[in-house]
Length: 109
Image 1 (cartoon, helix red, strand yellow):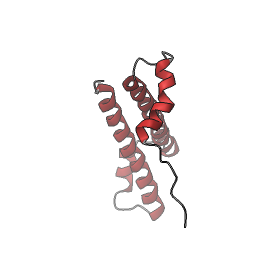
Image 2 (tube, helix red, strand yellow; image 1 turned 90 degrees about the horizontal axis):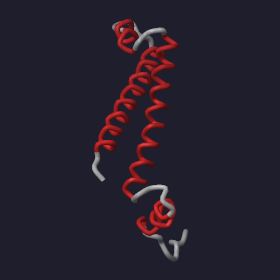
Image 3 (cartoon, helix red, strand yellow; image 1 turned 180 degrees about the vertical axis):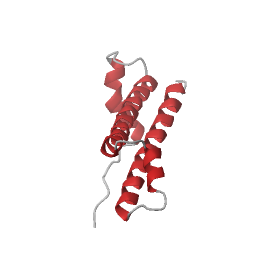
């Protein structure tokens, strides 16, 4: 049986230790600005990842997702359906990350 740590560091205390040097040294004006910047950077990396996945599908099939979908109607193999689901998933996650970016960007500090 594993033992619980003797002293758990509360999340806010831990975050303060990590982030306070960046604010104290003037890299960011506030914790809010710092967290927003870090979050937007992460979101941008996710957007780039899914954009590249969508572009890779478009290059591979030399068509858009809608064109691929139309061509499969009523005659898709299991492999083609799997490919379609992977492509659709990449589009869905791209749109979710883009929506999150707008929400975070518009959030007042």
